[in-house]
Image 1: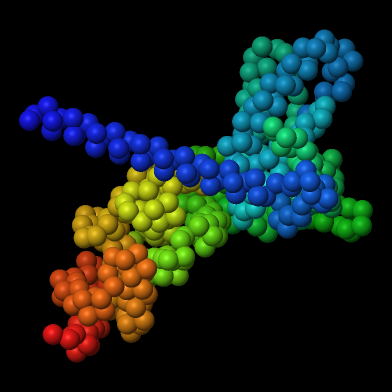
Image 2: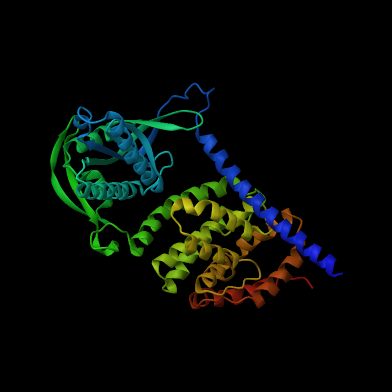
Length: 450
């Protein structure tokens, strides 16, 4: 008997592992399919048509002194040294989700906001430039100690629209053109060695987060005079160090709240396309509703901005597992979270909290933390709202479509039982909804046929 129980336990564990692997694979397949759809087909007559991006931040950086050094130093050694710089730059832009566009000779070009459009690319590009700047300063300090030569860098950054064309099959690369590229190049050419120069357009977007100094106006062909600024570092309230180089928790939270808008747009689009048609209640509207309600209840409970970010993110994903299957959809939703959120800058601790919030919505709800209580109240907020009847009708329609419950009278009895045993967990939800919920019970009782 013990052997049988042990074998049964092993089989259950194996099934759970296989389900997790299956969920991971489905997430990857869906992501790859989405990317493939965005790529031009070889059969498409418009395959070489440029893609238009409305908001891209272009970074030009130039290694000063390289051309002079190549005339009197070993060219191969210099090329090797330059490759090391570019390898470091590649790792920086990759971490900030910036696309390397080109590295020709002593010029390194990258762009934020392609191929995936986002609202945070000006901030990310400036952060990347600061990191590149510090890398070069470190090399210069080491070179002084060794009495060896070291090069200098100039930076030019501008934000605006670009046209982009793609090339390559195994590794897709981008070529960008337009006035935004020309202006970034012009700013870099006017730049002072070791300084990060940005345009007035980029400055408008990033000035809240970075200390900037107005430099001058420079003439740009067909554009007239444009203002340029020098970036000194992060503002003191957003920096962990005195130099404004290390972002603190406050900055990361504020940055993630901006990035959340891109995440929300991506997930709502995905849910609209992938949620099954028979989900009349657990649909896109319900997810949007829960996102709105967690913010309403969360602010009523006076939670922090970071906690609000985690709550809204959990609400966005709490029914995402339905895109795979309805059974155990909470768990499947956490697997989608694990796949997507690292790409949007969430750390492992944040992801674990978000997954805990999602799992707390599994019926019957058993929340332990305040954030878990808030999402449970938001998930069932409709129980105490004036639109309870039409919303509950969509749930009955969904259950009927799945042949789970088809008798309307039995449905009303089940609702009375559920409502009578339900209670909200937070003070805010109790103040907002509890009275109306009691009224719903009385209304449904009148509909029941004994």
